[in-house]
Image: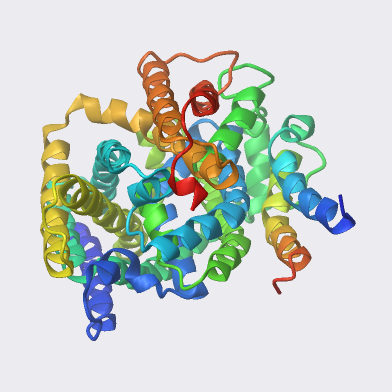
Length: 478
Length: 64
């Protein structure tokens, strides 16, 4: 009975969120620009909610708690890299938005076509980004399954429930596009903040008297847990510094983040978002508190089980309706980012592969239709890949972050250096991706530093070197 | 370089430096506040100071 109560609450939360978003966009007139980038009309607060909705995924929360539980201090990097990402975003996003507005861009690869004058490069970028993003969607499905399994008190394996909620969300994206995702993010953010105040503050108070008392006990039980290991050790100081810098640089490079950037009403909206988004990191601190509390309350969890630590505390010690709300908030953290990812993956194919490369469905009406159909197809593809439990997905995820980071030099040099040529960018991205993949698959680290750095350095060297010996693009002079 | 420009660069570089290469220098437990170790307090301080710094950057650009 416990399981049906908590799962019932989760179902109610998902249905209420979807209905709310449907209701909110019922008068919106659809076009490809409305569907993919919200007609470039989102104001500061609406965009803030959308960005927060996309950035803080189920794995941000489960992973952050798991790191706080299992590794301790290395988890702090999650607080720092997002903040560095927002500082860089303050300058980068308005520049991306301006060229998006001037040239009427829809997708991240569109930037490469506009700046470097090569449709072939745009199509290649679209295919690479598609390959990187689809495993990221399946990751959200794994998050969803873990959550629903906990909510079912072990009576269900979570898989069927995850599939059903994923199909609901795919149909939701099919109908509503980016604006619907933003409305759903409002519900998600409100619920998440409520749930995390509960797990991050109420649990430490109830079990230890106060968060401060929890830290006292944690320091006595695990004196080194809250400090970084020295120097080049695994997850040590060098790892921390290099990872914060690298992941900060790549922070906004996912194609869904670029789509969200285009959706802003003006460039100041993006600057205001960069100013205020660091405040959202507070919720991560609450997740850390929950992870630390769980380490003392339910010690001994290993590997993936550590990610579930604070959820297990809620499951063991609180009534089913509380579990239902906490897991419901978590489920939205999987479903809202998944909808943004699906939408961007579908638009990469409909715009840059079907439209630009093959000349199919280039009118507004047919582009809207093909994008919608592709949302469903990409959803089914992700679902299929996830159900086959293909091991290559795990390796692709290892490359996701370092992979999308390889697009950063093309943006930065594209804005700052006129000579940057299409061949320079192509060589940089190809070399960077190849090295990032090689290092990730072979699990190589150099001096404790994040291996993505080498890939990014190679990328920049190739970009500059090849640009110097090739012709600058014609577009650059216009 | 004008003074405004130097100020703007400082406002950008300071939080990034504080959140990255300074962290190994503050990798210790004491002093604590609300039970939290010093390294965590340091990172939190800079995370929540960053909106102020970025707002300041906007001021130097005459935006708000």
